[in-house]
Length: 318
Image 1 (cartoon, rainbow, N blue to C red):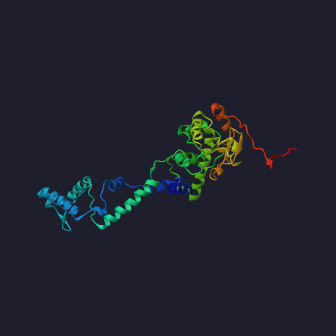
Image 2 (image 1 turned 30 degrees about the vertical axis):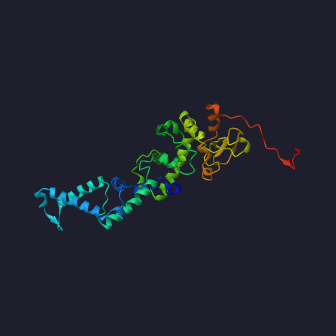
Image 3 (image 1 turned 120 degrees about the horizontal axis):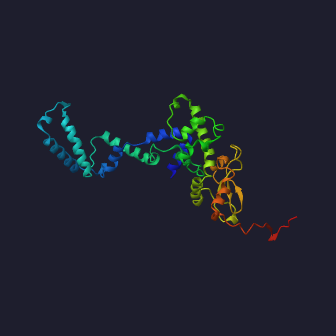
Protein backbone atom coordinates (compact mmCIF):
# COMPACT_ATOMS: atom_id res chain seq x y z
CA UNK A 1 0.00 0.00 0.00
CA UNK A 2 2.82 2.40 0.81
CA UNK A 3 4.39 1.92 -2.61
CA UNK A 4 1.07 2.68 -4.32
CA UNK A 5 0.58 5.85 -2.28
CA UNK A 6 4.12 7.01 -3.03
CA UNK A 7 3.61 6.31 -6.69
CA UNK A 8 0.41 8.30 -6.71
CA UNK A 9 2.16 11.27 -5.06
CA UNK A 10 5.00 11.06 -7.55
CA UNK A 11 2.52 11.12 -10.41
CA UNK A 12 0.93 14.31 -9.08
CA UNK A 13 4.36 15.95 -8.84
CA UNK A 14 5.63 14.83 -12.22
CA UNK A 15 2.46 15.68 -14.11
CA UNK A 16 0.78 13.60 -16.77
CA UNK A 17 3.80 13.70 -19.13
CA UNK A 18 6.15 12.49 -16.41
CA UNK A 19 3.64 9.82 -15.46
CA UNK A 20 3.58 8.49 -19.03
CA UNK A 21 7.38 8.46 -19.29
CA UNK A 22 7.77 6.69 -15.96
CA UNK A 23 5.27 4.00 -16.90
CA UNK A 24 7.02 3.46 -20.19
CA UNK A 25 10.39 3.15 -18.47
CA UNK A 26 9.10 0.62 -15.95
CA UNK A 27 7.26 -1.52 -18.48
CA UNK A 28 8.80 -5.01 -18.70
CA UNK A 29 8.79 -6.79 -22.07
CA UNK A 30 6.50 -9.77 -22.30
CA UNK A 31 9.30 -12.26 -22.95
CA UNK A 32 11.11 -11.18 -19.75
CA UNK A 33 7.95 -11.64 -17.70
CA UNK A 34 7.47 -15.08 -19.29
CA UNK A 35 11.04 -16.06 -18.56
CA UNK A 36 10.74 -15.03 -14.92
CA UNK A 37 7.37 -16.65 -14.26
CA UNK A 38 7.70 -19.69 -16.52
CA UNK A 39 10.48 -21.50 -14.62
CA UNK A 40 9.65 -23.15 -11.33
CA UNK A 41 13.16 -24.08 -10.23
CA UNK A 42 15.43 -21.52 -8.69
CA UNK A 43 19.16 -21.04 -8.88
CA UNK A 44 19.77 -23.02 -5.71
CA UNK A 45 17.62 -25.94 -6.90
CA UNK A 46 19.78 -26.80 -9.94
CA UNK A 47 22.00 -29.78 -9.16
CA UNK A 48 24.76 -31.52 -11.08
CA UNK A 49 22.28 -34.21 -12.14
CA UNK A 50 20.03 -31.55 -13.65
CA UNK A 51 22.95 -30.05 -15.58
CA UNK A 52 23.88 -33.54 -16.85
CA UNK A 53 20.33 -34.09 -18.09
CA UNK A 54 20.39 -30.77 -19.89
CA UNK A 55 23.75 -31.55 -21.49
CA UNK A 56 22.36 -34.90 -22.70
CA UNK A 57 19.42 -33.11 -24.28
CA UNK A 58 21.79 -30.70 -26.02
CA UNK A 59 23.92 -33.58 -27.34
CA UNK A 60 20.88 -35.37 -28.74
CA UNK A 61 19.75 -32.20 -30.46
CA UNK A 62 23.19 -31.81 -32.02
CA UNK A 63 23.17 -35.42 -33.27
CA UNK A 64 19.75 -34.98 -34.86
CA UNK A 65 20.87 -31.97 -36.88
CA UNK A 66 21.60 -32.63 -40.57
CA UNK A 67 25.22 -33.12 -41.75
CA UNK A 68 25.03 -30.15 -44.06
CA UNK A 69 23.96 -27.98 -41.18
CA UNK A 70 26.61 -29.32 -38.84
CA UNK A 71 29.31 -28.55 -41.41
CA UNK A 72 28.31 -24.88 -41.59
CA UNK A 73 30.82 -22.15 -40.98
CA UNK A 74 31.87 -21.92 -37.36
CA UNK A 75 32.48 -18.86 -35.26
CA UNK A 76 34.90 -19.26 -32.36
CA UNK A 77 34.56 -23.04 -32.60
CA UNK A 78 30.72 -23.08 -32.29
CA UNK A 79 28.56 -23.60 -35.36
CA UNK A 80 25.32 -21.79 -36.07
CA UNK A 81 23.27 -24.98 -36.03
CA UNK A 82 24.25 -25.52 -32.43
CA UNK A 83 22.83 -22.12 -31.54
CA UNK A 84 19.45 -23.06 -33.00
CA UNK A 85 19.51 -26.39 -31.19
CA UNK A 86 20.43 -24.58 -27.99
CA UNK A 87 17.26 -22.52 -28.31
CA UNK A 88 15.20 -25.67 -28.92
CA UNK A 89 16.74 -27.39 -25.92
CA UNK A 90 16.14 -24.30 -23.80
CA UNK A 91 12.46 -24.42 -24.72
CA UNK A 92 12.32 -28.13 -23.83
CA UNK A 93 13.97 -27.49 -20.49
CA UNK A 94 11.53 -24.64 -19.80
CA UNK A 95 8.57 -26.90 -20.54
CA UNK A 96 9.83 -29.49 -18.04
CA UNK A 97 10.22 -26.79 -15.36
CA UNK A 98 14.02 -27.12 -15.22
CA UNK A 99 15.91 -23.85 -14.97
CA UNK A 100 19.58 -23.93 -15.92
CA UNK A 101 21.54 -20.70 -15.62
CA UNK A 102 24.13 -20.62 -18.43
CA UNK A 103 26.48 -18.04 -16.98
CA UNK A 104 26.86 -15.59 -14.14
CA UNK A 105 25.88 -12.76 -16.47
CA UNK A 106 22.56 -14.43 -17.27
CA UNK A 107 21.93 -14.91 -13.55
CA UNK A 108 22.55 -11.24 -12.93
CA UNK A 109 20.21 -10.27 -15.75
CA UNK A 110 17.54 -12.59 -14.32
CA UNK A 111 17.83 -10.91 -10.93
CA UNK A 112 17.56 -7.48 -12.53
CA UNK A 113 14.51 -8.54 -14.52
CA UNK A 114 12.90 -9.81 -11.30
CA UNK A 115 13.38 -6.40 -9.75
CA UNK A 116 11.99 -4.70 -12.84
CA UNK A 117 8.97 -6.99 -12.88
CA UNK A 118 8.23 -6.20 -9.23
CA UNK A 119 8.42 -2.49 -9.98
CA UNK A 120 6.18 -2.90 -12.99
CA UNK A 121 3.54 -4.61 -10.87
CA UNK A 122 3.41 -1.47 -8.71
CA UNK A 123 3.87 1.38 -11.14
CA UNK A 124 3.27 -0.04 -14.58
CA UNK A 125 0.27 -2.25 -13.97
CA UNK A 126 -2.07 0.12 -15.76
CA UNK A 127 0.08 0.18 -18.88
CA UNK A 128 0.74 3.14 -21.13
CA UNK A 129 -2.88 3.49 -22.27
CA UNK A 130 -4.08 5.34 -19.15
CA UNK A 131 -6.17 8.30 -20.23
CA UNK A 132 -5.58 11.77 -18.83
CA UNK A 133 -9.03 11.81 -17.24
CA UNK A 134 -8.46 8.52 -15.41
CA UNK A 135 -5.00 9.64 -14.32
CA UNK A 136 -6.35 12.94 -13.00
CA UNK A 137 -9.30 11.44 -11.12
CA UNK A 138 -7.06 8.83 -9.47
CA UNK A 139 -4.66 11.41 -8.04
CA UNK A 140 -4.62 11.74 -4.28
CA UNK A 141 -7.07 14.44 -3.24
CA UNK A 142 -9.19 14.19 -6.39
CA UNK A 143 -11.56 11.57 -5.00
CA UNK A 144 -14.48 14.01 -5.29
CA UNK A 145 -14.20 14.07 -9.10
CA UNK A 146 -15.99 11.63 -11.37
CA UNK A 147 -14.81 10.74 -14.87
CA UNK A 148 -16.51 12.88 -17.52
CA UNK A 149 -17.48 11.07 -20.73
CA UNK A 150 -15.41 11.94 -23.79
CA UNK A 151 -18.60 12.42 -25.81
CA UNK A 152 -19.73 15.15 -23.45
CA UNK A 153 -16.40 16.97 -23.72
CA UNK A 154 -16.30 16.70 -27.51
CA UNK A 155 -19.66 18.47 -27.82
CA UNK A 156 -18.84 22.16 -28.26
CA UNK A 157 -22.25 23.16 -26.93
CA UNK A 158 -21.33 21.82 -23.49
CA UNK A 159 -18.15 23.92 -23.43
CA UNK A 160 -19.76 27.20 -24.42
CA UNK A 161 -18.07 30.18 -22.75
CA UNK A 162 -15.13 28.27 -21.27
CA UNK A 163 -12.58 29.31 -23.89
CA UNK A 164 -12.52 32.85 -22.49
CA UNK A 165 -11.94 31.64 -18.93
CA UNK A 166 -9.11 29.17 -19.51
CA UNK A 167 -5.68 30.09 -20.95
CA UNK A 168 -4.18 27.75 -23.55
CA UNK A 169 -7.73 26.49 -24.07
CA UNK A 170 -7.14 24.51 -27.27
CA UNK A 171 -3.97 22.83 -25.98
CA UNK A 172 -5.59 22.07 -22.62
CA UNK A 173 -8.58 20.48 -24.36
CA UNK A 174 -6.29 18.34 -26.51
CA UNK A 175 -4.46 17.19 -23.38
CA UNK A 176 -7.72 16.19 -21.68
CA UNK A 177 -8.88 14.22 -24.72
CA UNK A 178 -5.42 12.65 -25.26
CA UNK A 179 -5.15 14.16 -28.73
CA UNK A 180 -1.62 13.91 -30.10
CA UNK A 181 -0.33 17.40 -30.84
CA UNK A 182 2.65 18.25 -33.02
CA UNK A 183 3.19 21.50 -31.11
CA UNK A 184 4.34 19.84 -27.90
CA UNK A 185 8.04 20.17 -28.73
CA UNK A 186 7.62 23.87 -29.48
CA UNK A 187 6.81 24.81 -25.88
CA UNK A 188 9.22 25.26 -23.03
CA UNK A 189 8.97 23.27 -19.82
CA UNK A 190 7.33 26.23 -18.10
CA UNK A 191 4.72 26.54 -20.85
CA UNK A 192 3.96 22.82 -20.64
CA UNK A 193 3.34 23.21 -16.91
CA UNK A 194 0.96 26.08 -17.64
CA UNK A 195 -0.90 23.91 -20.14
CA UNK A 196 -1.24 21.13 -17.55
CA UNK A 197 -2.59 23.62 -15.00
CA UNK A 198 -4.99 24.97 -17.62
CA UNK A 199 -6.15 21.42 -18.36
CA UNK A 200 -6.93 20.85 -14.67
CA UNK A 201 -8.92 24.09 -14.53
CA UNK A 202 -10.77 23.32 -17.76
CA UNK A 203 -11.66 19.83 -16.60
CA UNK A 204 -12.93 21.20 -13.29
CA UNK A 205 -15.24 23.68 -15.02
CA UNK A 206 -16.48 20.96 -17.38
CA UNK A 207 -17.00 18.70 -14.38
CA UNK A 208 -19.23 21.28 -12.67
CA UNK A 209 -21.54 21.19 -15.70
CA UNK A 210 -21.38 17.44 -16.24
CA UNK A 211 -22.50 16.48 -12.72
CA UNK A 212 -25.77 18.35 -13.33
CA UNK A 213 -26.67 15.90 -16.12
CA UNK A 214 -28.32 12.51 -15.59
CA UNK A 215 -25.10 10.60 -16.34
CA UNK A 216 -23.06 12.85 -14.10
CA UNK A 217 -25.48 12.48 -11.19
CA UNK A 218 -25.48 8.70 -11.61
CA UNK A 219 -21.69 8.71 -11.37
CA UNK A 220 -21.78 10.92 -8.28
CA UNK A 221 -24.50 8.71 -6.75
CA UNK A 222 -22.10 5.78 -6.73
CA UNK A 223 -19.52 7.89 -4.94
CA UNK A 224 -22.15 9.09 -2.46
CA UNK A 225 -23.13 5.52 -1.60
CA UNK A 226 -19.47 4.60 -1.12
CA UNK A 227 -18.94 7.55 1.26
CA UNK A 228 -16.26 8.96 -1.04
CA UNK A 229 -17.30 12.49 -0.09
CA UNK A 230 -16.95 11.86 3.63
CA UNK A 231 -19.38 11.96 6.54
CA UNK A 232 -20.80 14.82 8.55
CA UNK A 233 -18.57 15.59 11.56
CA UNK A 234 -21.59 16.59 13.66
CA UNK A 235 -22.27 14.03 16.39
CA UNK A 236 -26.06 14.07 16.16
CA UNK A 237 -25.98 13.49 12.39
CA UNK A 238 -24.75 9.94 13.10
CA UNK A 239 -22.25 9.71 10.25
CA UNK A 240 -24.54 11.09 7.55
CA UNK A 241 -22.88 10.94 4.07
CA UNK A 242 -22.11 14.39 2.69
CA UNK A 243 -22.08 15.93 -0.79
CA UNK A 244 -19.44 18.30 -2.22
CA UNK A 245 -20.54 21.89 -2.74
CA UNK A 246 -19.02 25.19 -3.77
CA UNK A 247 -19.76 28.50 -2.10
CA UNK A 248 -19.37 30.27 -5.43
CA UNK A 249 -19.58 29.42 -9.13
CA UNK A 250 -16.68 31.76 -9.89
CA UNK A 251 -13.28 30.02 -10.08
CA UNK A 252 -10.72 30.76 -7.37
CA UNK A 253 -13.28 32.29 -5.03
CA UNK A 254 -13.35 29.56 -2.38
CA UNK A 255 -12.38 25.96 -1.83
CA UNK A 256 -14.77 23.02 -1.92
CA UNK A 257 -16.87 22.19 1.15
CA UNK A 258 -19.06 19.22 2.04
CA UNK A 259 -22.80 19.67 2.58
CA UNK A 260 -24.71 17.57 5.09
CA UNK A 261 -28.32 16.97 4.00
CA UNK A 262 -29.36 16.10 7.57
CA UNK A 263 -28.29 19.24 9.44
CA UNK A 264 -28.18 21.30 6.21
CA UNK A 265 -24.84 22.86 7.03
CA UNK A 266 -21.45 22.87 5.29
CA UNK A 267 -18.06 21.78 6.61
CA UNK A 268 -14.44 21.59 5.54
CA UNK A 269 -13.31 18.24 4.10
CA UNK A 270 -11.24 16.13 6.45
CA UNK A 271 -8.38 15.69 3.97
CA UNK A 272 -6.08 18.64 3.42
CA UNK A 273 -5.61 17.52 -0.18
CA UNK A 274 -9.33 17.71 -0.89
CA UNK A 275 -9.50 21.04 0.89
CA UNK A 276 -7.35 22.62 -1.82
CA UNK A 277 -9.85 21.89 -4.63
CA UNK A 278 -11.67 24.85 -6.14
CA UNK A 279 -15.31 24.97 -5.10
CA UNK A 280 -16.35 26.15 -8.57
CA UNK A 281 -15.53 22.67 -9.90
CA UNK A 282 -18.72 21.46 -8.14
CA UNK A 283 -20.78 24.63 -7.99
CA UNK A 284 -23.54 25.86 -5.72
CA UNK A 285 -26.39 23.96 -7.42
CA UNK A 286 -25.23 20.35 -7.43
CA UNK A 287 -26.04 19.07 -3.89
CA UNK A 288 -29.56 20.49 -3.88
CA UNK A 289 -30.41 19.32 -7.40
CA UNK A 290 -28.91 15.95 -6.48
CA UNK A 291 -31.28 15.57 -3.50
CA UNK A 292 -34.23 16.73 -5.61
CA UNK A 293 -33.40 14.07 -8.21
CA UNK A 294 -32.90 11.31 -5.64
CA UNK A 295 -35.54 12.32 -3.10
CA UNK A 296 -35.33 9.01 -1.27
CA UNK A 297 -31.82 9.95 -0.12
CA UNK A 298 -32.93 13.05 1.76
CA UNK A 299 -32.78 12.18 5.48
CA UNK A 300 -34.92 13.47 8.30
CA UNK A 301 -33.63 16.38 10.31
CA UNK A 302 -31.96 15.44 13.60
CA UNK A 303 -34.27 15.49 16.59
CA UNK A 304 -31.49 16.15 19.08
CA UNK A 305 -29.22 19.11 19.54
CA UNK A 306 -26.44 19.82 21.95
CA UNK A 307 -27.42 21.61 25.17
CA UNK A 308 -24.59 23.37 27.04
CA UNK A 309 -24.59 22.80 30.81
CA UNK A 310 -22.60 24.01 33.80
CA UNK A 311 -22.57 21.61 36.77
CA UNK A 312 -25.58 19.92 35.22
CA UNK A 313 -27.65 23.11 34.86
CA UNK A 314 -28.67 24.56 31.53
CA UNK A 315 -27.28 27.95 30.69
CA UNK A 316 -29.69 30.83 30.70
CA UNK A 317 -30.17 32.38 27.30
CA UNK A 318 -30.56 36.16 27.49
